[in-house]
Image (cartoon, rainbow, N blue to C red; front, side, top):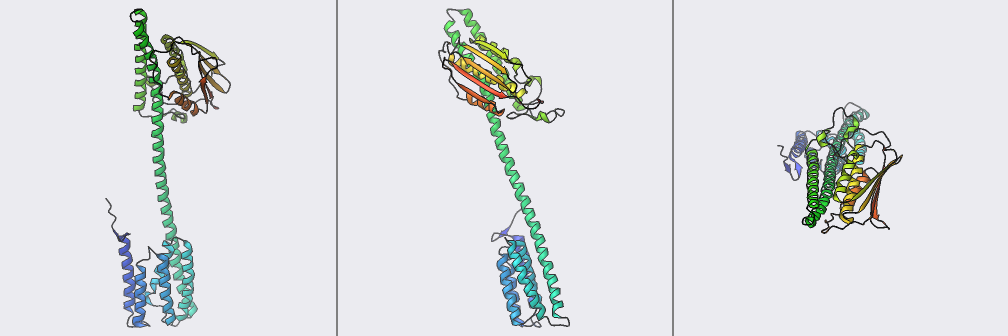
Length: 414
């Protein structure tokens, strides 16, 4: 485990390094105390530069301005370039690397260029002033370019870190959205299974209770329907739970289309976990006929091969429509289920006449049936209309556009 130690809010390693740099500048100032022009006064200027360098990371522009002002004092005094003037190069490097705006570094470079000329003019020796100025200029320019390169690299690393943090936040947000979507999908599937089965079982149980003494045979038949419906619901629940427990890795040979479809989740292709499809629609209608609805089924147009997810949506819309008819219109109501295959869409209509016998104890409505149907239909850019009819009863109509491309192998949850 890494422990980040700080002093006054600054990393300990950085503070120690800056203190070492400042100490080196002080030593250079003390080294020329006896021989350098200006003597002790020049050494004090060097010590002041060293103290300013302690803050070169936190306040690079201010430090550069202070060091430049001290260097101007040195030039005005006529002392010429001294050993501790390395502090000027360090301050220049720091402002280019650490300043918030590169403009400060450019301005420091211009000031340093003027200082190079002045230092060349005050250089005493056998070489011409311009040769000294060129030498100082090359050193200063090299330091400025090194600072610029390190600054560029620093900001590049910071941008990578920020990008990684942003991607991590996006992944977390996507994971939360996926969890919320999965919860919604599970709730919708559970509603489809439980609401349908419970509605049938309640109606049949009430009927059995009131006909037990007068018509035992009819009561026995109603109890049988309750048992069969309960077993069917238990089977669907077992299949749904089995799907949720299994990993959703697509089959290696399924190709890109095996990943899934909008609004679905991965599921194994084992027959045990097959999804409900239109081939099972007649069995669903028969169960509602046994429950007491007078169901008529009509198919128009040329049936097209639908993607499995679209078939499941059609099945669930019919199931929800019949469940609502049984719960609200009652036993004996006539229901017309129409499946119209158009060139570009499949239209599902479930219409009841509202003339059945209302249940003795109506099943409470969860209020999520129409919402769930709209969500299912919306996944495929379809439309849903539901409402009462002028002639009595209720009508549900869903229009589901057919996919523009040929259906691919899909793997989604039932």
